[in-house]
Length: 158
Image 1 (spheres, rainbow, N blue to C red):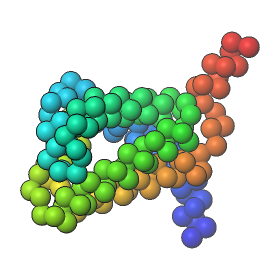
Image 2 (image 1 turned 180 degrees about the vertical axis):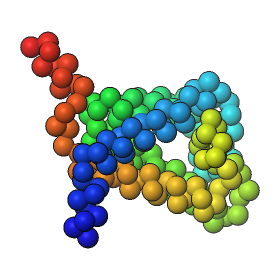
Image 3 (image 1 turned 120 degrees about the vertical axis):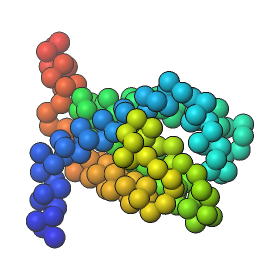
Image 4 (image 1 turned 45 degrees about the vertical axis):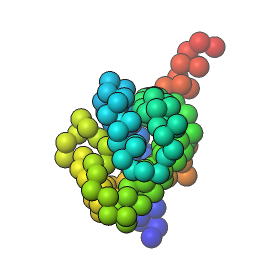
């Protein structure tokens, strides 16, 4: 157990988590920003959000994803960004799980630009999101922000 924690808390592992999650969330948000109608259809297909909230969600969520992704990659407010990403992943995992449990045959709507990560709701998206949640949770708990771009910029302008 100590070895696993040591591996997860290693600065290289945390850096990998930051860059991987950041890139995934940025890539995931790009097609959603370009094609909000497609995201609206995906949100509506889950049948858990009242129609009045579908459009605002389709507009706001991709921008939250892209900002959190950029902050993770640039090492700015990593713990806060990872907490936001974790919250989104909890919501996504819940949505996919309930759709799968109800037998809905719908597209996940997660990664249009990354074809090998896209697919119908089922075990693969649930497992994928839980793994990503573990990565973001590790950043929330273990990242110390010892060296970051924000800190370097702040020092440069003192």
